[in-house]
Structure formats: structure tokens, C-alpha cells
Length: 434
Image (cartoon, rainbow, N blue to C red; front, side, top):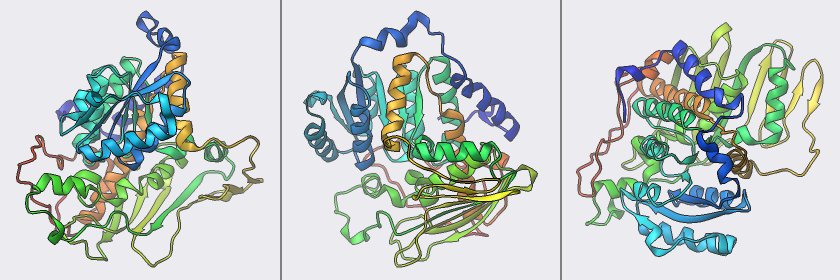
């Protein structure tokens, strides 16, 4: 991953970069050779990298998004998920699944083999520690991309993602993010009204992600004697910071993203946080609860509470407080109580937000107007990383410190036989900010 000084971006420079990359949304692209229009009547070939549950779901959404698409390749670190995904998609999508045995790629280099297999659109759904490398490879090869959230687990990876987003814009490639709430019709209407001043100036946003545990870490005694360090961690990826980013980054990132959305995607100035591990996690290295306070310009605040502990209070909502009212959005219909009272009402059949992501991705490829979600998907990921840094170290972390962090969690080279020590659990006040 590129970690050169040229990639170190201040908050002001990040805003400039975002404006440049986001320009792809403002006007139709002028394409050399009218590439996208030429593809309009052609069959688009899809490749899926990462055959877990989210990846299988994304592939199903992609196959349902366009009449003239086929799935031609699958890639995963392990062979078993390939067959499970293949069987499931054949049952649900029949002849649209045209994956032959030689196009089922397993191993640490499977992603590159898939990218080189002749696909047009790549779906990235591996553990997020791999996202920067896979995104770069796909964009370098000129592929349109669906990029599942979050986009990195450390700042060097995030800087690579920003570079890839810029390259995608230059190549007129669509890059759609897996922050699914941005593609939900009720939330789009809700945040449009918020941005139009329905509750005045936003003073604070309180977002909750209070839920139960996800993918508990098995005890070391269950590890087969012949299983290497890397395989053990990959098979239990959610429990390791370098692979998942921690639950705050991997799961609660949706709530973090909606805080950014409410504040019109202004980067926060700084963050402070508390957090720790309440329940034993055997050899894992992630926290199970955090509370992060983000400070934005004009003294606005974003509060994000996250816990993944069983037998407790659950909530997944966003509470907005403005100078002229309040608003709430969660799994229920969003509502606003401000200058006027408003609650979202369905006016047409709802399109599932996961499906809409892919509908809009493939429509953008067909109509020659590439979508580039790069700026805000990178910013929301960095906000998550910033909160984790603050919780892990116990320090106040500025946007610049987060962006310029040199802490590289993902190993440069991976090998099944490598020794890969499990990082110790962070200790606030002891763990250093680097």
C-alpha cells in the first residue's frame, strides 16, 4: 500500500480531494471511445471476491440488478465457501451463474486471478483488512467496483483507498460503497430535509449501535494442531483488529457514516473516546464497547455509542438535535419534529437498500455516468478509525493525526506458514498513538 508523504492529507486537503473525486457525480462523463455506452448492449461479467454471507448477498443483488449480467468467477481464501456460495446462487439465479470450476479461485492470490479472469465488475466483500489491496488491484485493471464497508482497518490502507478512488474517477469507473443506508429511500428523504433546514442548524447527533456479540472467538483449544497462525486468524477474522478494524469500525461504521451524513460530510476536527473489553474474548484483540465524541466545526458534536455484549439494552437509531427541532431515524420510519412535523410515508413499493446499491451501480455503467462514492466512503471509514484510535489510546485524536497515522496493522506479505503473533489488547493510557 502506498504510504508516501504525498498521500498524507490534512483536513483541508481532504475536503479539496473529496470535491475533485466527487465531481464524477456532478455531470455525465466523457468517455474515451464511449466505453460505457458500448457496453450498454453487452453482457456484463461479475466476479465476487469474498464468499461469506455478505458476499453471497451482494452477488445475488448484482445478478438481480440488470437483465444482462452473469456471474463468471468466485474468489476466496478458502475453497469451502466457494462451493457453498456457488450452490446457493445457482439455486436462486439459475442460468445467470456461469462459474466453471476453473473460475473458482482459492488462496491468498485468488483475488488477482479473479480480476485477471475477464470480469467487468468486481464485488469486494472480504474482511476489510484486505480492502485497500483488492480495490487498488481492481481499479488498476479497469474494473467497476462494489466495495463493501468499511474500506480499511488502518490509516495507510485508507490513504491507498483515497488514491484508488481518484484513479477510478480518472478512468471513468463506477465505485459504489457498501454503506447501505445512503441508498435507502426513506433515509435519503430524511437527510435531504435535514440539510434543507427542517430542524435548523444541527447542534448534536447521537447515534447508537447497541447489540449483542458477533462471531465470538473460539478457545485456543479448538485450533487444529496443523493450522497456522494466519489461517486461524482468517477463519476468526472478526476478532482481530488488523482484519476487522474492531467492532466499532466493522459494524458500528454505519452509525458513524450517518453522523457524517447528517453533518453534510464535514470531517470532524477531533475525537475523544472511552472503551474496553467487558466479556472474555480468548485470544481476540478487539473491544466490545466504545463511546466516541466527535467535535465538528461550529461546536456541533457527534456522539456514537457502541456495544456488542449480550443480555442488555439494544438500540440502533440516530437522534438529531437542531436549533429548531429534533429528528429520529432508525429501523422504524424516520420522523422530524421541527418547523413542521414530518414522518416518512411510503409512496411506492420499497426497493431494499442492499438491492438499490447494485441497481444504481449497474445503471451508472449502462448510462455512462459513473458513480464515485470514494470521498465520503473514505471519510466515514476514517471517522471510525479515528474513534478507535481515541478509545484504544485514551487520547484526544485530531483529524490530521488520524489521517497521518503511520500505524500499519496489515502485514505487507502474507504466507500460510508465516508466524503471526496475536496483537495484545489495547490499554487506554498505555497504548501509544502512532
